[in-house]
Length: 107
Image 1: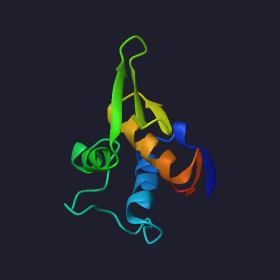
Image 2 (image 1 turned 180 degrees about the vertical axis):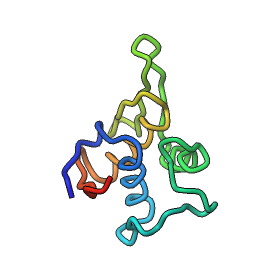
Image 3 (image 1 turned 135 degrees about the horizontal axis):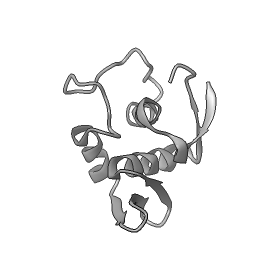
Image 4 (image 1 turned 30 degrees about the horizontal axis):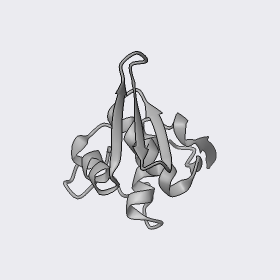
């Protein structure tokens, strides 16, 4: 396991962290798919990330000058990303796990 800042998470590492928050401690790398049979990819798939955004009341704001996005949950958590789902999922993970998370070395 390696300690990683939430703001640096992307790809499968970010998806793994979201799954850990969504499914709880029973989630591990042997669970390859979400309820729809697709690989769980909330940082790139709106079918997976959208319900999390809705349930957690995550607000997304585009920063047109910087070409990135900011996601926030109330005034408590904020995260940035190059795409809305990445920003939202970083925000979600930060709200559940704090500013850093232990990610498996294989990711």
